[in-house]
Length: 241
Ligand SMILES: N#Cc1c(-c2ccc3cc[nH]c3c2)n[nH]c1N
Image: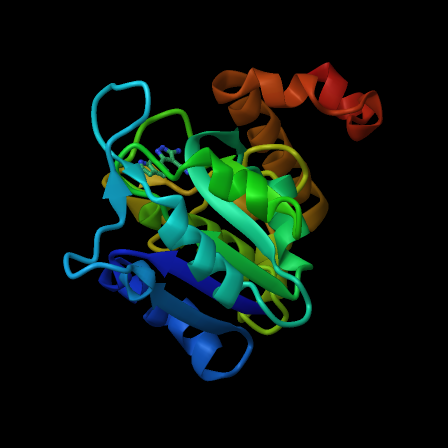
């Protein structure tokens, strides 16, 4: 997978070259290019923003800077999928993670200020798939942090990135539910023992207990996730909970 990121703060994306993601890049499992949007500015001040038509607070990012930048970065085969983080976007969910993980090329456009002139997205959509996506119902200062979140979530599903691919398969949301609690040594910590069933060696019981913990946690914290699952997701034991 080839990933390109356009931003006025390239240094914000430095964490992508550390740890697991950095190792994946070093191993050639994915490529990452971060581009400074100001390279496509035209004036001595390297302006990327201007006042909003219709008035209002803040500034809007200029289409005559973003347009040429996306033209150049999105050129080549295959045409990339363009992802534009915005608080007004569709939710970034595990389902979208799985979709993105199958793409050969992703380009992320990091907005700042009050966002990017809408014509940039509308114009790009005539040539490629464009997603305006939100990582949650709160407002950040720019798109860079959202890109860090999205790239990490997607990279976990690329072959060879995770040491143990089973980890991703047992994630929260992998079966539509929240993952249950995890435990490790010591067996007792501050007078809190590890649940006996986890030390029983009975893997059928352990699997059942873990499923129950996951269902109970999901019911308590995110009941709407249960409503979204088909009836076929639940066995008779689940229903007895
Ligand atoms: N994704 C996402 C976002 C943002 C976001 C994204 C881009 C810009 C550009 C200026 N401000 C931004 C906020 N806020 N909250 C989210 N869930």
